Image 1 (cartoon, each protein chain N blue to C red):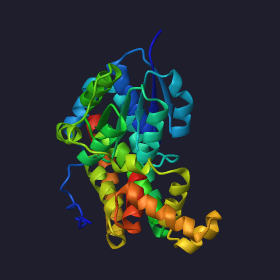
Image 2: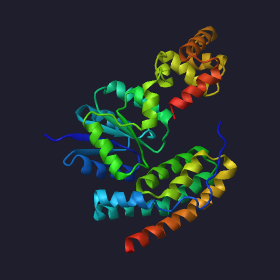
Image 3: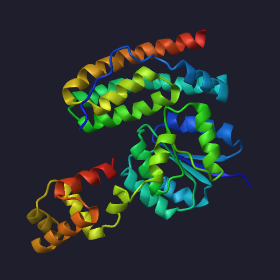
Image 4: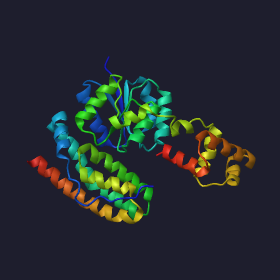
Length: 205
Length: 120
């Protein structure tokens, strides 16, 4: 039975480019295209590989990708994005992606990246690979150590709410909110709430 | 925060010829033609959508549409359009209007260059 790959990108042209690369890299692969992460989640259990854009309408960037990876830990995953820099690649590697490709990559490079990841290899740029080897716990991993309640408080903080307003909105006491904020700062290893909010924003880019 | 540096008009080629050659070599001319027709439709549509979002003062939608267009431009080797959409994503508000005007021009020129490439 042939292999199945899911191509996740909200732009039809980018999906088409990836499909053309698959046709060259692994002819006969059954391709399923979608523009949404929720569709990909629904179909991933039966797939042999997924290619994933980082900016999807129903995605919160690296955080969503990390959750997807937790749900499907063994599925070969190649991230194809218009946002390219070694820091993003490093973060993706730590989160468990098997490869990263910029959308400006040439078609032969895309073909080779797909072939490699489908064959359970890894595909990162040389510069990022060096950093990956030295990587410590990433910001996304730190955010994912937060409890659901702490994450709700952090989201409320990022909306600009002060503790009193957060307490009212989440039906908590102000003391509980302060306790959550202290725990959030400690878990994220940041000195103040502004840094915590910025970390969440970066993770959800 | 890094300072925003706008791309110099005309500094990027309209089309990345090497990327296009590799694309045609890998997928063949007919699939390339289908692919590039989709991009021509984008060139005609997307700059106007980005401009409309900007005119309404919707900064997030402007950036998001520019990013969306950039992905398509990168995949087909439309270097100048990719550079300008990337700049619109990062630009402060005061710089965005002139960049969108450049994007309109670059989109028309890119379509012309694609037609010349196809006819050659």
